[in-house]
Amino acid sequence: MGENMNSHRNGGTENRIDTARDDNVIRASGLRKVFKSVDGQLEVLKGLDLNVKRGEMVSIVGESGAGKSTLLHILGGLDTRTDGELEVCGVDYSEMNDDSLAGFRNNKIGFVFQFHHLLSDFNALENVMMPLLIAGKDQTESRRKASNLLERMGLETRLKHRPGKLSGGEQQRVAVARALATDPQVVLADEPSGNLDTKTASSLHQTLLDLNDKLGITFIIATHNRDFARNADKVYELTDGVAVAKDIGDL
Image 1: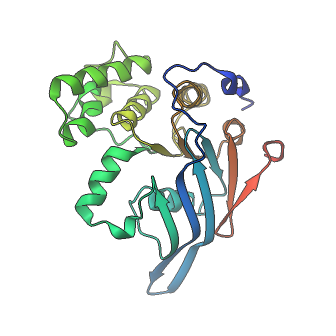
Image 2: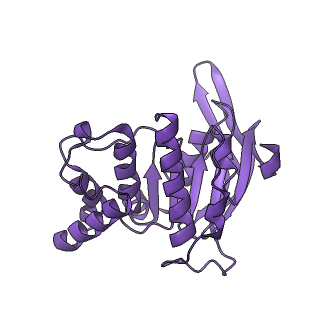
């Protein structure tokens, strides 16, 4: 769709996370994932390597069924790897029990999915507050922070609206705000604009780019949209179960 967002890489420095340190938020080596069924085994990830540094925006492209969602689910602790090494924010999930992993996900990782997964019985403000309340944060402070995030998303007039009263783009912006609520170390986004029209998708893309540029938030984004993918710091194509680094001009 011909988006031109390259200017975001030269943006401001407002509250930006220090990216000078050479530390990896994600470090994956030889990552394998095999699904077993009555019909046999399906190896989706076949020794995948991936390093993502703090403050980077990384795009993952690939055909449907290539394993992009599987990869993000493993990186986010929503699924387990079959083999290989994985550290997220210096932590190996295999050394954590279920309760520890749930707490880690809530505090360290933000998730944005193609379908927003907002709670229909709660308004926008309450949806964004939810991760903070689950983490045991003060309700007044949680409300203030959620309100500020929604204002940053351009939704200051929609705080009291439930998801059913919001447009698709507004719902996804609420989902992004919710993902940022606990100041995660990394945000994993799985086709975040895949269910949006072209104009709304472009607006959401720019929002994500601005968050990365101005605040230094680390993003790993699986997307079919190669115009959007070109604006990332790094692009990998998932093919034959491995991640292949791509030159921006080759997309």
